[in-house]
Image (cartoon, rainbow, N blue to C red; front, side, top):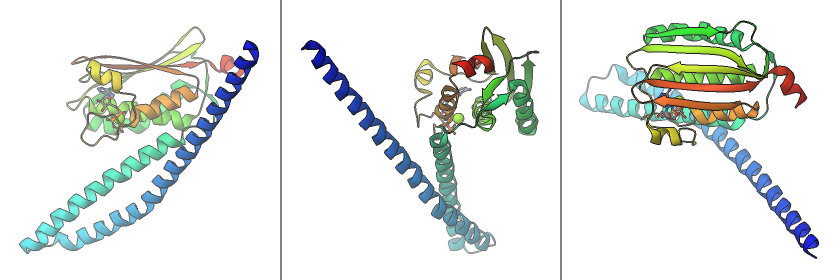
Length: 250
Ligand SMILES: Nc1ncnc2c1ncn2[C@@H]1O[C@H](COP(=O)(O)OP(=O)(O)OP(=O)(O)O)[C@@H](O)[C@H]1O
Ligand SMILES: [Mg+2]
């Protein structure tokens, strides 16, 4: 009797679980579709505001100058919305991975080449420490470039007067580790507790989707991400990924 009851409870739980999963998938698809639908008219608005702005640039009358100010402020809001939608779509897209065997060192070098000019402009020294004979990992390289971009952008924003950005790779047992360390302002314990929450941001223009996207990408690769931060000292993010051979067998 008890066994029958347990079996029926189990079946009903499994049905609830299935139903929730399909509701979640439906909402995710709807939200993604909605973001797409908003993005197109929004870019038409930005484009038209750009044209209007050009017309008003030579404005001489006070009335036209006030109009220019309003157009500028509308344009700024549109750009913010466009960024939010792009970040949202990026967050929602993580799921379909295009994994291939890759060398994390090579990816870091590629990232540094692309990021170096901007870093220099911001007074940031990039200091790579890349382990030799690093085992390969099986990753979606485009998504991992996104991880490096999001973490470095946060690091850069935490070092408004410049600083050092260290990029480390090494292996520990059957894991490959990637660390991103900045000498920036660090985080309070409150911020650390909430930093991976979607839409949590301490920045006036932040969408709060950078770290949630990073974590989603890392976890989709059966990786983990840890953070260690000290206000006034800096922040270290450590990403641990399974070495390629182990990853294939699990
Ligand atoms: N390297 C860092 N140093 C200090 N604070 C950080 C660092 N990385 C993240 N944070 C804190 O975590 C919060 C969440 O980061 P997240 O990248 O998710 O969003 P954001 O940077 O505010 O906005 P977005 O990345 O969407 O533009 C940030 O607002 C900031 O307070
Ligand atoms: Mg960010």
